[in-house]
Length: 393
Image (cartoon, rainbow, N blue to C red):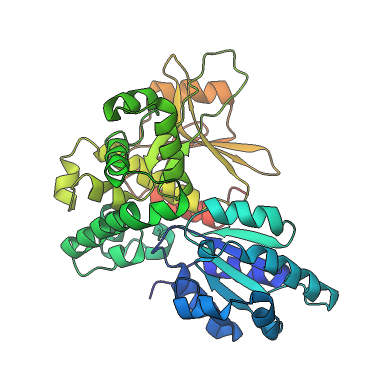
């Protein structure tokens, strides 16, 4: 069993807020973690995908009021979004009795309905906690763990599979389930074949600037329709749009976001890449490593940290710009899948533009050493540990 760091954050959130929403894609480990918390707190667990549990809530107010002294876990809350209005009344009634925290833990497989419904009815009563797939700080670096995580991705069942073949098949089935069943729960009816084609095209463009018009032309769709489909994949926490960093530097800046399939294992399954050897010979290897590094770094960020990339029309570029809250501190991070950590000229030009307090080149080696004034070479695992330990806060 791999211990999840986020568990402590959930405990702390429950101790200060009436409702906590644990948000993450399917099969990321939300239910397993919630069941552990259930055992710790003698909580009531209801799976809203289970017909019997849904029937218990035919009169939700009458049922839930019986458990005002216990934590209630509501899994797959998006199946019964009308519950949010009831939860609001129960929470407010409990507050008048002095029961202000730890009432409900709600789990959702996507942000769409959950954020909208809870935002309308539970403002000031709910705290959100994002749950990412496994990252480097959780799996460690022993026994080739990092390459295994890169190839298989961070979904627990995929990472812990007996072999690469089993892991690959699990991910292919995961993709099929999303396309054929889950997508229709969260958005308008979208042809599964169309969305699969779009998802694969985004995989081939891993780490590139988003060009919705080009994708629309290839799919014989309008650009607004493609943009809507991409936003759905973003809301399902399957795709990331990394926004450009805007600074008043008097230069023409790139305005399009960069696009990534968030989990490297899903990226490889979409492209038919089953093992490390095939990945190393594939054109997407550089974009795959960049996306893998970015997802690991972002999963360890202190709360409210802003993440962007920086690029000018003249070629100055920084892969990841982190702007930490409170201290107004900016870090510039270059990502290289090589044992050599020497950045290109464009990185230094970009640093001159935005003047970061610290600069790093995250590379495939293990040693940390200075490259130039204000710029250090550092391994991905060490960079993640620095962020997880609050070094940037």
